[in-house]
Amino acid sequence: MRALISVSDKTGIVEFAKELVSLGIEIVSTGGTKIKLQAEGVKVIGISEVTGFPECLDGRVKTLDPHIHAGILAKRSSDKHMAQIKEHEITPIDIVIVNLYPFKETILKKDVKLEEAIENIDIGGPTMLRSAAKNYQDVSAIIDPTDYEIVLTELKENKKVSIKTNFYLSSKVFEHTASYDTMIANYMRKERKAEELPETITMTYEKVQDMRYGENPHQKAAFYKEIDNTKGFLTNAIQLHGKALSFNNINDTNGALELSKEFSEPSVVACKHANPCGVGSGENIYEAYIKAYTSDPKSIFGGIVVANREVDEKTAEEISKIFIEIIIAPSFSDKAFNILKRKKNIRILKLKDIEVKQSETAYDLKKVSGGLLVQTIDSKLFNGELKVVTKRQPSKEELDDMKFAWKIVKYVKSNGIAIGKNMQSLGVGPGQVNRIWACNQAIEHAIEALGEKVLIGASLASDAFFPFADCVEAAALVGIKCIIQPGGSIKDQESIDACNKYGITMVFTGMRHFRH
Image (cartoon, rainbow, N blue to C red; front, side, top):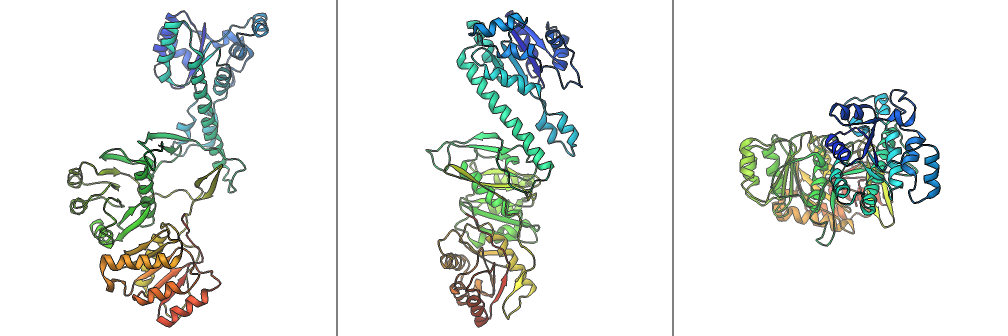
């Protein structure tokens, strides 16, 4: 038997090669792998001895040769194949141990140049692996050092590797090379700054962890991460305390985290079932938390809390008074962490660079039966100048409150309404089938949590236009003084007239923020 070894990741390769040699298997190797094995006393046949041609072009051409690929691809059950390789004095290759140039590690380096990335595109490696994987009935194709043991065990016990194991190894090869090629394609697309959505789309993700279950206990689930995300995303959070995150934990936390990125000042976002239930901004993180908590002390129970500043002792004391599923922040003071971890089940997550947003060219994906909806992310908050369409003009404080409420409603499930005042959310109405229900819900939540008078002078944001004036009527009844909405309804004038009647300011943004 003959094995060909050419690996970038040399983990365990010396020990594996020595075991193969002890079983009477010849080793053929290339470049740095050959040097490594020989230095460790492993008897190696150089690739040039097999091909009769020197490695050339700075190592770009080493294994692209019929003496290699015919040795791999020859079907042992075919008399014709075996006669042909015998005629051309080609020795069969029974095991191919190859892992590829570190393209991923290269493109993740800071300020990597295109030329360096190109030189780390492996050509010979994927070709050998695909040849071996195609001929899995006769050849073992190994890309993962963790599979060395299973191959050795079968060789020692049965003198060969089973077809079942070879098929498993083959499927891993094609998964791996597909991912490898996808990384290259996506990198090249990014480098050419393509703006259009591609005619065909391929994506690759790496598993972070298996989930106990999905949204419901009968569903299987796992958490995967993008290859090139580096800062500010949930996949990079470090869990400091608590049990493993669930599918729903991750989904809910992501929504809260994305909303928190809209704020530069100290802010806290509380989220429940992927909808914000309390948001506050203040001079410090304690003030921000108190605002977020008091805006809806019922819904925050069992929810997610995101803080965009270090959590201090005083804030931790307040958080620890209720049951919170997850607290995520860029850091925790030692005293704060010790306070929070007293609760066994709270998950404490540390996320450095929590403020970093996704690239504007990133994709938002929605799986539908038999297909995939793909769009660029909703990266904008406003699209140009705001337009006051009523007689009453807003004060600076009112304009700030409208912008605050607009940030929140961008992350509320449609139809969505958010009400805010003094950098505090007062009421949120998410996911209703008509807008007046969402409006009434937001008003009712505010009154229940903070009392009727809190809405006097508040600002209301709607994620899409008002089809009727009913939301203005409802706002006027409780003293809301400012409304921000996209505009664009054929009945806009009815809403504007109602605002003028009640002395309410209305501002059009010219853009909507549906979130389904």
